[in-house]
Image (cartoon, rainbow, N blue to C red; front, side):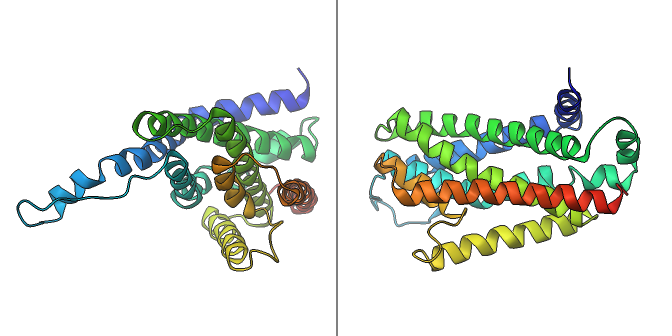
Length: 258
């Protein structure tokens, strides 16, 4: 097995050894299925907690399956991102703080292999966990609401997963510039939140922003149409991830791993 493969396997093992490979999938699955279940049982929830007059009838418009899954994506973009940041914020800083990185880099390991192995392992964890969660949400949505075609769901997930990969790239870069986990999380959330806010505010000017991928993922659920804007956004996101990884490698060489 090559050096990258050994490092990648080591990172995956550590993710499960420290519990992240367990609590993150469980948390995201619960987050995903909460949306369809809450929407379905909302009248009963309001009836129990609302202190309504006796005999009052609650009538709420039934959302479509597409609207429910769009709500799931919205949950991922708020609580889900916070969980992902919490799970990934110390992927580099931990070994810098306890000087374990020095022991790794004393071996025939390049900085590129070191950074990429951590990035790839986090992608497997985050994308895998989110996919399982999204499948569970899709199942309950089809069971309780109108049917959502599986091809729409898959394409929607692929677009959203690219947004998650961009977020992980931001976390990797932040981890090479900052040492404290709190600072890494704060800066990363600030960048992600600012990009999302500006993309929603200036939809035309920033239609190729990586944050726009979450919007396109929601639209794909309603109509499977791959526009030119989606293509440009995918390209911009891939280039942004590449540049962030280059910055991370360059910075990590400068800090001498400690």
